[in-house]
Image 1 (spheres, one colour):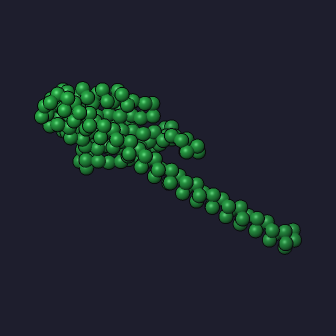
Image 2 (image 1 turned 90 degrees about the vertical axis):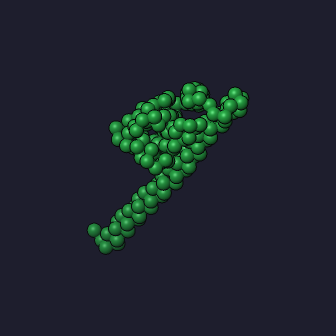
Image 3 (image 1 turned 60 degrees about the vertical axis):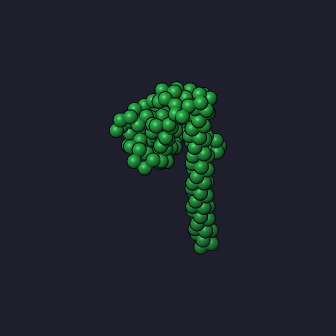
Length: 172
């Protein structure tokens, strides 16, 4: 093999390797950007549910013309709201802080939330938390968000899980 052929092959290999590293770097940036966008969007959705709950309680209080609603009335509002906003990409659960562990008040597709007891305890300690998780069995990504919610005289914990799928399409 002549020298110019060797130089051409080596140059071609370097070009291929450079293109490979560049494309991997671009894909990593895209992935990080996509995750940041999804986190922001899902945090907004979570806080809108939190505000919706607080507003429904305030509205019901105004309709009943009372200073405080009973815990049962608040719990009925929570259950009806969860049933209203249920969709197939979202899991939601509300826990009541009546015990040290908290007890499940109502949920919709909340299996991931119920399984993540460590996440729940961190939310109860820190009052809010966001966690990006990967399901290793199916390589699915999901975002867990949890916040403390004070309604009337009780403390509740609102958890939402948002599934992130189809990174290639940019859709969830």
